[in-house]
Amino acid sequence: VVSAESLGGVPACALFWAAGLAFSSSAVLREVPYDPGLQDLFFGEEPSMASRLWTSGWDFFVPTCVVGFHLWTRRHRPVFREHACPEQKQREATSQLKVRRMLGVEVVEVAIAAPSAVASPSSPSASSAPA
Image 1 (cartoon, rainbow, N blue to C red):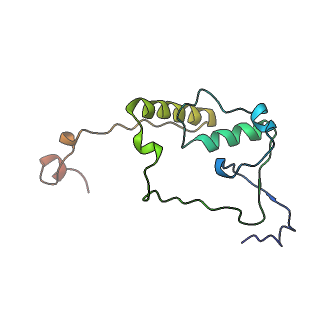
Image 2: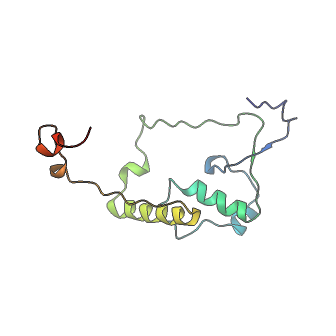
Image 3: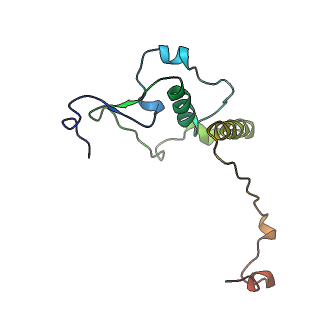
């Protein structure tokens, strides 16, 4: 566990950038604006911005003490992602694909079988499959 005392009261260098804990000069957004081509991006925003900020010369630091908390549970209210229309979901998927390609992350296409094509335990194809 890293403590404020072990850091000498000075923020430590960090590896990641978090949108919910990003404090800086407004110059950061003038120099590295959000990519307008990444529409409806939620999961993928932070690695995208982190890579773009870091390769533009910005460094990341963490505070020496807890300055806030994030309530991850969403049981108490719906969130915007639960109300997404099919078009919004497609825009997000397209944006996530763009981020994966930008980061050099291998994109694997997975074919999902239709429920009728899935072998059931009593079907001949399931019993002949190797264990």
